Every structure is written in C-alpha cells, then in structure tokens.
Amino acid sequence: RFHGNDRSSLCNQYNRVYAAYQDVVTHAVMPEASDIYTHNHLLADLRKESGQSFSSEEITDVALTLSSEPMLSFIEAHRRDFLRECLKPKPDWKIIERHYHWIQNNYLTPKYLNAEYFQKQARILKHKKSRMEIRKELLSLNTKTSRMSQRQKELLKSPRLTQKTLQIFAYLRHLSRWIDQRKAHMMQAVYYIDLLLQKISSLTDIPKSRLGYYTPEEIIKLLREEKTVPVKILASRRKLSVYVTWPKGKGIGEALFTGTNAAKIFKLFESSQAGEIKGMVACAPVFSFKGKVQVVLNPHKEKFIPCRILVTTMTRPDFVPLMRAASAIITDEGGITSHAAIISRELRIPCVIGAKIATKVLKDGQVVEMDLKTGEIEVV
Image (cartoon, rainbow, N blue to C red; front, side, top):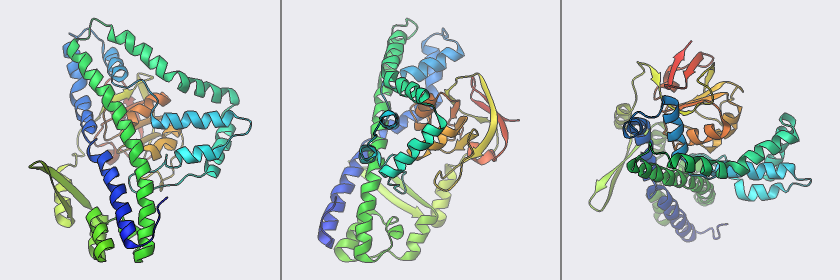
C-alpha cells in the first residue's frame, strides 16, 4: 500500500514504481523479437538443417515442443491453484485473491478480482464439470512439466537435429520463460500504477481517465509544478497515438505522435486487406477444422458466443475466459512463443497465429475452414 497524500511523497512513489515497471518492460523487449524469427524463418530453417528428414507434421511438432520451456505459464499456475481450491472441502478464496487478483488485467486498465469473484467462478465450473473432470484437468497441469521434459529429451537426442538447431531452440526456450515472466509483471504493475493514479486524481481533481494519457514526465511535472496537459491534447492521444523510439548514442530517442502524423505512421504498418489469410500453425490436434468465427477486440466490452472460433489481433491474460470457451483461435500477430500459441496448446484447441489480416477480413458468423497443416484459412 502507498502512504502519504502530499504531492512530494506521491511523486517519489510514482518515480519508484514507474522506474521498476520501465525496467521490466524495456529491458525485456528483446524476447518479443523472437516472434518475427519463429513466424518467418524457423520452420524453413528447421527443414533445411534437418535435410528434409522430417515430415510437415513432424516439423511443426518439433518446433512447438522444443521452443517451449518445460514449465507452467503464470496462467496455468493460476488455473492449477484455482482447481486445487475447488476440490477442497473448505476452499480459501482469499488466498487466490491475494496471489491472482490481477490475472485478468490488460495493458490499459486493471480489473481487481476479489474472493467473491473466484468463488462465483468455482460455482460455474462445478456446474459445467464433474469432480472427476476437475481432478483430471488438475492432474494434467500437475504433470505437464515432466511430460514436456520427457518429450524434449527424446527429440533432443534425434540425430536429425544439428548443433546449430539445438542452440536456437535452447535460446527460444529461455525467451519463452522470459516472455511469460514479463507479462505477469506487467499485469501486476498495471494494478499498482492505477492505484497511484487514483491517489493523484484525488489530489489534483483531474479524472483518472485523463491521467492515463499523461506521459510519465508529465505526471512528474503535474506533481512538482502543478503543470497540466490541455484536454484537447489528451483527447487527440486517446483517438490515436504512435510512440516511436530509435537508437540515439548510448540511449534512445523517443517521440509521441498524434493526429495526422500518427495516422501516416500507423498506415505504414497496416497490412493490405487483399490476398489469402494464412498464418503459422500453433496447435493442431486435428488436420483441419471448420466453424463459425467471431471477431473480438475488447474482451471486456464484447460478449463472446461459446464454441465459436475466436478471432483477434493478439491475446492477453484477460482473453483466457474467452479462449476456454472457444472452439479454435486465429490471431493477426504472434509467433511460437506468443500468448495465444502457449494457451492454445494448453487447451489443445486448433490455433493459427500471425494471420495478419484475419480481424479485417473475417466477419462475425462466417464459416471458415482452418487447414492445420499449412496455416491457410478459407471462408466456406
């Protein structure tokens, strides 16, 4: 908990929290670059290095298995602990609240989950699943790490894998752990930053919704010099912002663009809406899958219809309830170590990642067929 309500103490607390948050985010951006490699080069490099000795199905299985660290993700760890409490005669939901109240946060807003929330989720789960089914899911989570380790040991002994390939996979496994830890820290940090913004809002009479569009430097100036940012500027940032960084000497240069300039930069990164919908297969429990799609960009505002194919730009922890209800997943972004790839393999549901234009081309209710050998998605 934060102490002190004067500007000076709030400024010092904000500086400490944001410095820690910035350290987590900026020093760990590198792992995200692995998605570019895994999406565009990994499978081709693996085929080349192995001398075409793997079939298409084997190539994907090897890539998915060897690029993941044998561990439970923070989302899986939460699920394991939640299921354990569900099976207890007298569950203590305060424990789950204390450790996982942040589990559905996103990068914009926190959603504090209390003991009553987890208790309600337990009632819903027990209505859908028998005690035996809950035990089975818990057993699967408890044995996942050992099963992954055993499977990796078998593949790592394969004479079809070169030393170079083995080094690449060792690196990717390290990055997958790093990405998971980074996301967990970021989701927790959002909660603490929000607490500070609430305190700053009460002190300055500026709505928290506006403070969210202040830069860290502007928050400091607000607290030290009582300097506010014009409402018009904050509104333009909310409409569209592009934050750009570049190498500058031993540090980085940075700039925040809004309005026309932001739109021009943003357009450079938009994919064309023409052409085939194709991505990388992240999970293939079957060779092909057909179903109705639903595009969801904000899981807090859009109601997802169970058993549809979830289509989104990229998934985050707050998407997990929707992912559990989905029959399959398609994302615009991501690589083998992405959130969608990891969770889909945990759930054993079809998943194609990095489809680039899926959210722009596909419409709610359309029936699509996912080719889980090639990653191609066709509207039926």
